[in-house]
Image (cartoon, rainbow, N blue to C red):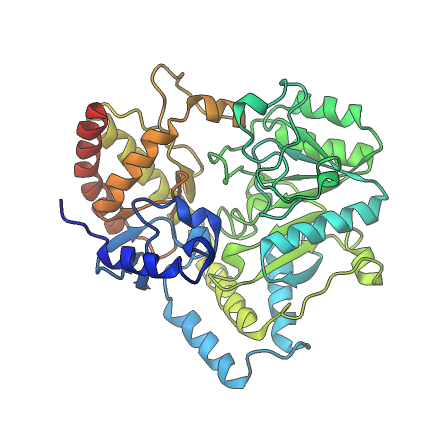
Length: 446
């Protein structure tokens, strides 16, 4: 077979001589057969430097809810660039963006801006500890909240270091972490309200906040079981903890006001990233006025030279107005397209005996590929995911799909953008069919 990725290979070989490991985010090294280099994108499509065209369901790790290079956003950024790219001061745009978030997101009484959701997570946890005077934060096993010391505690622990089911281990996947950070976290199991209740009781009066993805998109797109969100809110209220919703992925994607709108709850603090900036380095901390009081008073430091950068603000204003302009169409259309793709992928894979079981709400979903003998049914927690997901097989299938022009995220996550159409879904399924056939043939031979 001809190598479709010659130019990407050449650039990667060049990159490792100047860029540490050849990439600027560790996860990008996961891409097989080589980290790809891209030349341009338009709408739902992206082209690499070898001229290969893809229907893109990676869509900037979810940041490009609006598709690649939407004309209106490009114009908004260009117009602002003519006026100035950075002031390290105030401009009216930041008020306009904050007012839009305030109007759209139920828990957004006040807003502060940062450049990444990782920064916002750190700000939210600092604020929660100051607000409550407590040292601990509760998070859920397998959950990703940015790449910093605090955000990765309990993320992707290996099975031989899980700890028992009642006491999930407080591990970190990176070396160089401040050891004491691990001791400031309590790890609970996702989608087990009674286990959560017991963990809160065990550390009663010591936990400042519960942080969670309303839909655990970063790990298998696990939607909350009945009563899970309600139990988080109940426990936060009864024990004086802040409820922190990490809507980096779900924000503006699963509803104009995020998962808190679609699931019907109001958190104390909300983390917004990805879609709020449409691909620019922009994120926001939103919350109830009472929860933001320490920042308002200035007793909690929240700072950043590039916070509220006017180029990012111009992009965000355009993005938020795009969502608002859709009215009742959003998220109805992206949900329909996502569910159509999920069903089509499962049916097509089944024709070749491939146990592909996509799960998720539709605008985002995960490609579950069951191990031999694994049970059917929804995956609801991290340990069940590790036990049932055939990661090696998915990596091979993902490579086959890539070679046939369908691009998804290496870890199995798929996104639908506002630029995707029914035609894109039909074409993706047509392209996927020979990819499934190739995978079935080669995987049996492996």
